[in-house]
Image 1 (cartoon, rainbow, N blue to C red):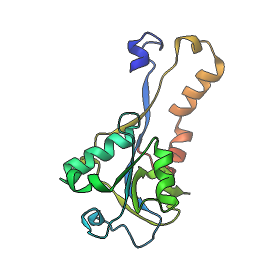
Image 2: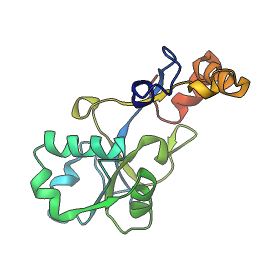
Image 3: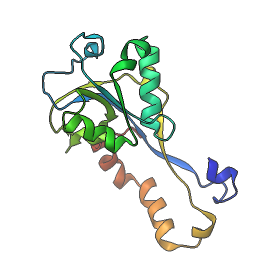
Length: 167
């Protein structure tokens, strides 16, 4: 949207090709329950989330904590990653007990790689749209146009879903 606003994008080319899903994840297979009650546990250690100013998944994590009424109780336990990748690393390396991460990070072949996960209901956070746009300077670039065509094709939709995204 900012690229369009700044006049850098080809008008009318922006589209959403996938919507990300936020999960609460732990590398420990027994740590996270199916309803996220672990967030209320007195034994819960550090909770990782991405910088909400620069990472859409971080902004979504803040919305979840606020909508569940847990923002103030979790504040002393929070550790902020600069990106969703760093947030995942905090949990993977046990520097945080749990973390708000992208579902796509914890799936492999459509299945949970390891650990435990709470699939956070979409009603708890705004959609995390994965958008594409053709830049004005790429308007005649065959590779850019091919990428857009691929993202809009039926062939790619199953692959996108297998990584935990909605279409």
